[in-house]
Length: 258
Length: 106
Image (tube, rainbow over all chains, first blue to last red; front, side):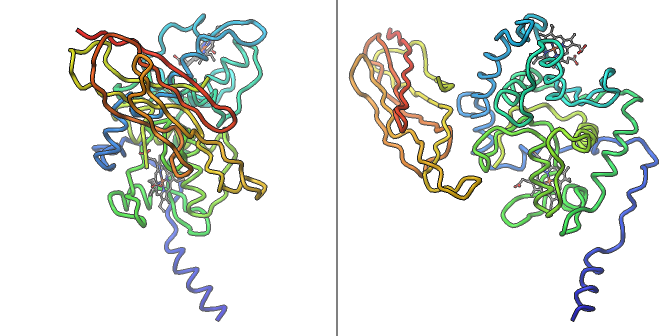
């Protein structure tokens, strides 16, 4: 009996997918398809209508926070930034000080602790989500344009490797669902291509706004893998690869998903 | 103060049917869900929504536990005269919030 189980486990493991460094720099999916197109007409309408999209409540909250003086220097984001149009479309980006890629929430956090000299915000807490939604919303409609920055290459390659690496008790990689099975169903859910153009995002399942990292965590927990803590480098590397893979897709933050 | 999105015309022709859409940020905690430590989270919902047009109730809704967070309510009324529309959400823990908008009827 034990043998049988072992065999079953081995069979399920299947051939190992090469997680080696990709030979070519990662490319965008040829014709990336936004997850919005896979939703019902009703949900698409909810996302498109600013008076029905609940994510707009967080955008409004974020706008108020953006204009509020904070921290030891009592400066508001608005004292240093007029418009941040297009910024979200090119994140994650390289950060000189930490010599590492940084995602949008990380950048906002950095401004808060360094430029405002205020206490850090919780990574998945309401104020940081609201600020992220307000900043990301200013890039709505613009194409995802990940920076061509050679310093990002190693992290980008790690991100792609993580995307292709099998994980969890179910031993599945992101690619096995979002590349090989995109368009098919997993139970009642349609498997989307898994793009990052709508974050932060309002999920009906969450009944709240959540970040891309929360979404990634959902997928990791879904295959019964251990998900890293919010803010971990592993997430930022995956985010970097997702941005590259979905390059050209219009930013839709805050998107709505089932 | 909870964030609110209100969508209605600023002006309308006399007799016209106007559509009003409201969205408010609220957890609508059902009172049936266990929290992190296994004990049931206390109910915290909006129980009533009222729209008054110059002091007269033109629309009212009673909300219950099965309604999702951040409730969206949309309804119509007839533009009769220039005046003020007020929107009030009331609920558990003395929740009460009112927003007003003026409507010009031509």
